[in-house]
Image (cartoon, rainbow, N blue to C red):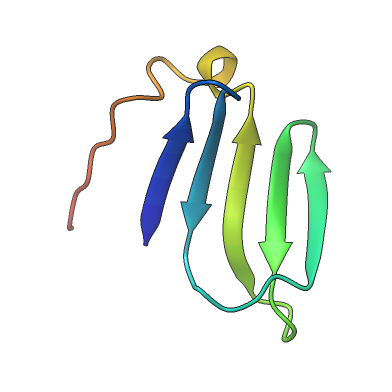
Length: 64
């Protein structure tokens, strides 16, 4: 999994798989889900990230 924040565009992109994206859907305003050919979610983009989270430059990772 990769997490990338573009501060110039204010977008967070979370990549679950490197499979090619064949479809994207803005499920909720400003949240775009990317799908592979089998309908699996391979990525998520969050637009205007700084308005939707406390600090988009900080990522916490936890294994439960």
